[in-house]
Length: 418
Image (cartoon, rainbow, N blue to C red; front, side, top):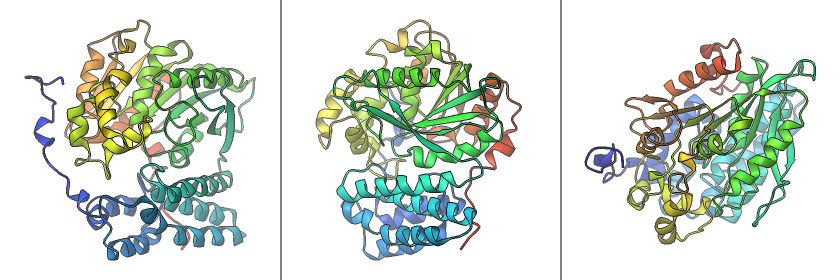
């Protein structure tokens, strides 16, 4: 902990319990519906018209923690299937794209926060299919690529699937910058694709990949060094893309992805123009005391159990709390003290209840100097002010004449078709 007296900066919040943990009704009415109405995380590509009938049924059924994840997921399928059927029958490209993406949003919330049951795993597979169908039909089409994991070892998978967009004007004679997005604990490539249009409008390529233990990342979840191997394979592949300006490659990690971005800035600095870690952690995020409180705070569901599953411990939370910090801490492993860190921007809200702001203070006390911006009075990731801070930093780093207001206007989803 970085606050005086060996405490967390939000120590007084740890004993509380957010009201949305009482039931699904509380979650929907106090936290999720306002976000769904705006079409923002975690409802990218989603609409209230699609979700409200589902939420009403779940509320009527009295769903509440601890959730039966198969039962939870099952409520979303019929509505998603109806949208898929409409999309498949549409003769209008824009309408079909929207309907496929709206279906993918329903499947996303069905598998949220991570596919831990059979029905949630089905939702993840169907959500990928729907999202890719919709993204292929957009003005700036996005495709899926399979990056060979040539450095696989110790139980890694063989392929890193990614969503990839390259501007039409890109060529070996007109190379373009590349932004690599690391997704988070629950937001995967299917929804972080929402950032594509903003970068496409600036002529910048975009590559979106999940982190180990989530989505389709091949890295062994319980191996602290698996991400290093995956990213080496990824950079080998990027190095073969003749349309990419290899001197203007940056990384942006969201939430848990920020943990991997901090690590990346130290392990692969020679491949990067700069790195942004938004809302990440590095050490105290694994404290047993923090994990004991995390299930009741800002996160919509059981954060500690979700992290436990993501890091390869299954349902064994006690073992995860006992071992995780020694095993995954970037301080304990010596990563933070490695010389030669890439240019690294750390951004988060000071009141973050998902990963403690203390971890960014810790980053500043070790290794090479970093750049940092804390958003006062804001919780996890410091949205939306953090997006303006980061985009301005990246525009300058990449040398692109971007306007943050124009860029951010591409993010909220507004349905055009009923």
